[in-house]
Length: 404
Image 1 (cartoon, helix red, strand yellow):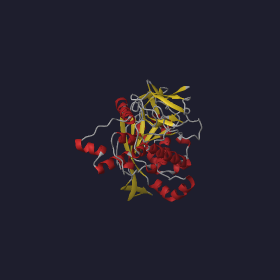
Image 2 (tube, helix red, strand yellow):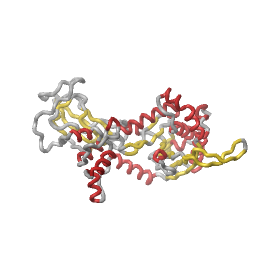
Image 3 (cartoon, helix red, strand yellow):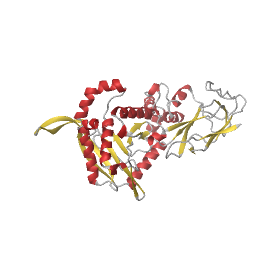
Image 4 (tube, helix red, strand yellow):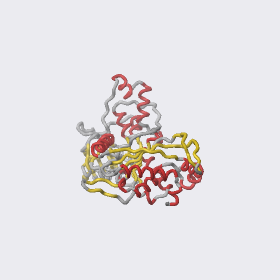
């Protein structure tokens, strides 16, 4: 009996994807739950698995094609002669010794080196298929996997492959990935739709730095994760959102939607581009849980393991350009949100401090903060007051612990 392999559901707001690659060709035998294809969406990569054991008799969409949820991607014959038993312990059967059909979008046979590159992810696999030579290139990713940077560096050193081609012509043309197209579209949408304005302030992080220095070892021992700055910023943002709810709202037509849940998007850089996984219910979390959640997101973002539902629904976002050395920047709204907080590099600076009515000069770890907001819904007074509340909370972190 023939059954259809369908494009799986991909989460809220995601209706289509690109077939990044096929792991099988027409005529191949597969086992139940074996991965047969990888899809690339504007947020994450997804695996498509075989619903049962059988023979792939038809591949309907070639690699690089676009599919929608529920669309037929391939046909599987469960009763084909020679099909492996449907067992969780069954090993994948060897491909049937049939001549491949000329018109079929069959997978290209790969050398051992290219095969290893394919396991490193769709970006690297695509570069290899386009001619990049990865022989002898050491992978810097997890478990020795190759990254795009490894391939480009290796090609440049060898004077071959993609880097050589780019050098000989003075330029290189590559198609935009789906996630890059989406980032471009959404940022432009924010610019075209929202009345964006940015206000700035600075914060003295001495108190938080002191807490981290004093309790870091005990924190790591108890929770298995380092105490960073992001958990303090997340809690400070929630406190400010509770005081100034317009920044936790959005515009829907001619209505304002005020949200009474605090789901904070944390911008994370990955090889595929910027992704913003959502830490949900931050108001009910402690610092350790926030750090553990963000650490897990960061790890899975690099490995391409984030789920679509983890990337939607944020009510406010935080982005940290400081990890790349940025001293000051103006973040762009993550539409339809109406506020985003930009963190920057921590620099020791000489500042005036007042203790007991006496002003003195001191060297303190300072950070510039930037709040971009939608002026259609947020007034300047609200935005400035919001940022001042964030600053005051960070400079007096005991308020977070005491709830005052």
